[in-house]
Amino acid sequence: MPGKQWGSADKKINDVQMKAMILAAGLGTRLKPWTDHHPKCLAVVNGKTLLQRNIEYLQGHGITEVIVNVHHFAQQVTDAIKEHKGWGSNISISDETDEVLETGGGLKRAAWYLEKDTEFILMNADILTNMDLTKMIGLHKALRPLATLAVSNRASSRYFLFDAMGHLTGWKNEKTGEVKMVRAINDIYPKAFSGIHVIDSSIFSLMKRTGKFSMVDVYLDLAMQYNIHEFDHTGSLFIDVGKAGSIEIAQTDFK
Image 1: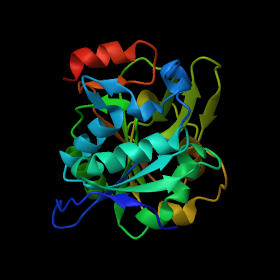
Image 2: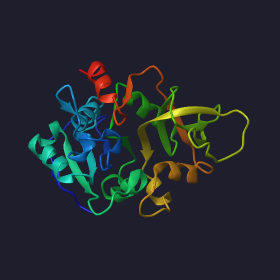
Image 3: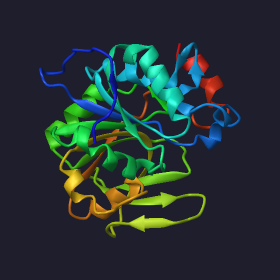
Image 4: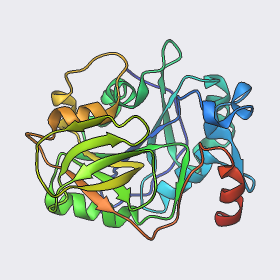
């Protein structure tokens, strides 16, 4: 599925261009009333949209080949990318205007762009962080799991559960009490997910779900047979900008 592309970046990492996908199709209900008229990825923090900031974050780690999925006010997103010439990166579009597909379905639709590479980055558009992505990529390449997930020790309503080796063993929703376990073990450690993944492209051949689905379910489907590993970035600056009042906090921490 070919997509539109803007930009003219030529920056490389280790002479091989790693690609990334930014998930920007969501309705952004937590950012109302802004998202009644705009997509959440174009919310502004100190003069820069979340989308621009995350594209520049990826650039800081040598990644300039990016695909962005769009649904909610999709034309505003594509117009901003075109107007700013991808902010110096080569930006392609994965069109979900017919139906928002959530994280897993959105990634699967963009397989045409990502599946020929060894690994790629997947990240949410509504987060801001100074986490060392290069270090995370290095861990992934050293351990070769199916996926490496950025997590930290912080309060959250939902947690991934890991064993002492850093392998995914389950998921828990603190609000509802729902728990999904991959395997029963005694020592498990809850970690809050930060919305950044490094994923081996072989995952596309393993994703059996279709339509609208979450990457959480994909990982829980596969974690019994494949290593889904943690990258703990506790201590790094991290803000989920989709939460109420988070724009004001981000204004202070991200200049």
